[in-house]
Length: 156
Image (tube, rainbow, N blue to C red):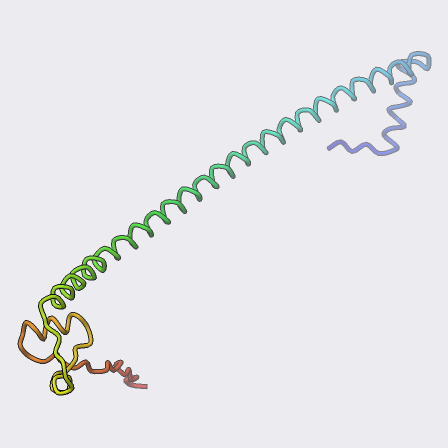
């Protein structure tokens, strides 16, 4: 800011001795030192208050960011829970219907004894197949293994 070299300081000191005088020069330098100390203390206090204000602002911003992240995470977890519940509800209803049908079927049918009865009938693999066979009068359809489609690259 100010460019004060040794040569300029010597000139200022010589002018101060001539203008103020050698007798009053120590008192003048002491007064200047006190004022400079007060200016430095005020500048340091201002700097400290400014730094504290910046830290408070940064902490408030960080606090807001953390609260925003927290609320976003909580809403995401709630949404995931709702979607999981919604996807399980149809499965629960189907399971209860199948169980009820199986219980009804088991209560209405009489067990067949003997080795000949077991060899003449095809045993259904699931309760749904058993119900379908009972109500349609036809044997259950056999399940075929599924084959994944083969993708081929057309035009190389």
